[in-house]
Length: 334
Picture 1 (cartoon, one colour):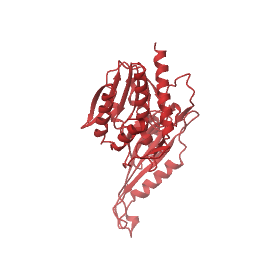
Picture 2: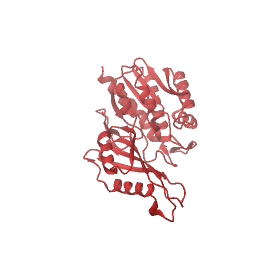
Picture 3: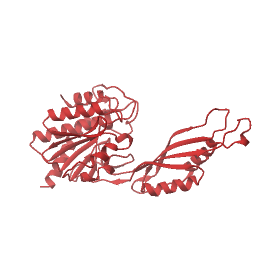
Picture 4: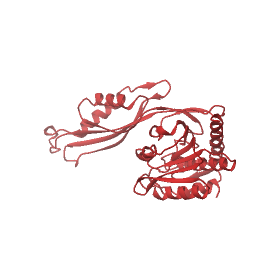
């Protein structure tokens, strides 16, 4: 099985978040047959993290098994692979696995592979994986970074803003209180606020992801809610305090999933560019796995889209880069 057949079979095993069981078992069996010592760790139900070892790892390559919905089947042409998970992150996993196989054939040991569930919806797999006993010194996390070594990632904060009102007949709106209009005022204030900016990480950004509310068009709305996702350059606690101040008691602000901004290590002596990325990763939840790095083929701009794809040549180049990063770090450790 070559790297592209590996990617095809993994992509054709649907693994939308919370339904990763079959893909985890596929990875377990493949890595075991390839000569790795493989264990699985149950997260929930049949959802498992997969940990493969050569010797006692001091360097571990890691990524996530799950994808966002909807499932999009595998297709390919001479240059590209298309479908859900092509770049986020099954093509990345393929490059890491084939790099590890190359290193194994070279006789190198003390290498690990860690593949977790749930990254796209709360990182519950990474949280559980952080309890796995290990002697790891470096974690090379794989996400689509356009084949650049990331030097930092923004954090994330998800909030739900819930406004309440009072129902009335729509012909007499003055007798009610519209929760929807109240929520719209709050969201407009969020849009007009000057959020923190960092010279290194850039501006805080946000996405008003969902809006729900009301009962019928002829009834003044007594409830409305919006989910808003912030990409942060400050600690989540600081930004949450700012959001509460903007809402100013007009609605309830419920805090959800959050990640801090992270500075990542780079491997010296490797001639590849660096960058700062805006998206979140599992790295903040894998604190017991050593100094973190972030690198992978493909672009985040293609992830989560109907046209998701990855260039085949980028995958092959990433095999070389992952292997080179690992060799360099192993040499540094003596």
